[in-house]
Length: 272
Image 1 (tube, rainbow, N blue to C red):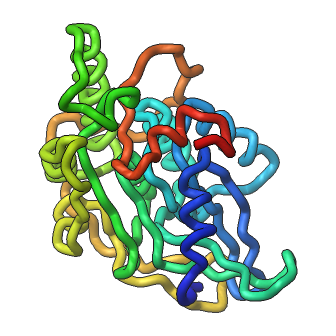
Image 2 (image 1 turned 180 degrees about the vertical axis):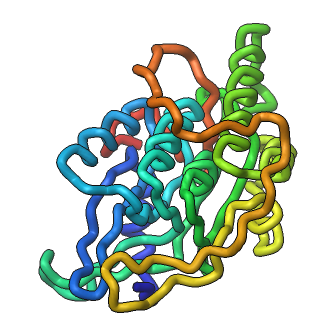
């Protein structure tokens, strides 16, 4: 169920913190959904595993509101979403009353930036409201993203970025995305404003597979999917066919927005 305006200040603060997963119950009108708000950190995949334990999340809707985060952690998290057969969308969850037990609505005014866009791609069905903002840019070394032009880089640094681009390319095709998504993202360096995808570009990149949310009485009703485009590219495989292994402690490029979010990722919650 979609609602009207949200409290922007509260939403902005949530997007600065490490990603938090919350189950939003909206019965008897619908099944409910998973709210995934905040920056993807190295801990996010295991945090989601803890959240999912004991819950029946197969085919669940995952509502994203995020400024991006770690490349490798986002890839691992996205593969978990795909294994669930999740529907992904962009929005924020808003209580319609003053008590915690009050019904909740999904507000479509939200942001999905940087690596969040690749989490959106992980859904077997993907919906983006007209009022949502989906923005892309290049991945970069997180500790140098704020002043990328003035920073210095070693050969090892370039190897890290190139390796992560390769992983991201394979993931994109595994998830059914088009090469246009990579082309659009890799064309925007970190010292330029993020590129907001138009409705046409959302379709061109295969980020959107449906145009509407079903407001039916069935608790399992979610969306009406459009016929997907054929996947382009050589790296086509069965996404989620194997479970991701334990995360290795390796350096990774970070995909961050330019609004100070990189600092929020590296600092503990509550620090600026």
